[in-house]
Length: 151
Image (cartoon, rainbow, N blue to C red; front, side):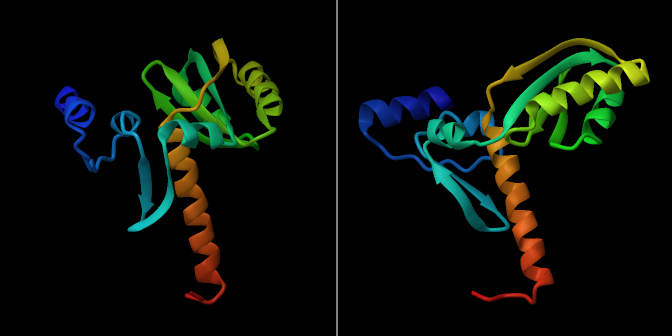
C-alpha cells in the first residue's frame, strides 16, 4: 500500500491525503497535521516536528519493567513512561535528563531493580504527538477551570 502511494506521489505528481493514528505511518508523509479533539494542534514536515521537539528521551533496559515504569513515573521530570517491547521509553522534560538518570539509578538500587542499559535516544513522532496532546489537555483543563470559552 505504502509503496503504491509513494510511487503515485513521486512519479505521477499526485497529492495524497492520509488519515492515520499510527505515527510510524505518518513519518512517511511529507507534511503532518496532528489533531486533538477535532482541532489541529501541530503541523509541519515530520523532520521539522522532530527537530522542534524540546524534551529528551531515554530508553531503559532492565527488569522487571513494570516496576521500572512505576519508579520512573514517580520521578520529577518524567513526563511519560511507556513499555515498548523489551524496553521502557521515557519522555523527559527539557533540562531534566541528568536528574532523571540519577533518580532512576537511585530508585533501582533502593528497590533492587536490575538496570541493564540506560541510553539517550532520538525522539520519535509518537513523542511529539503525546507532548502536543498533553499540552492541549493541560491548556484545555486550565481554559475550562477559568470560565469556559473566550474565543
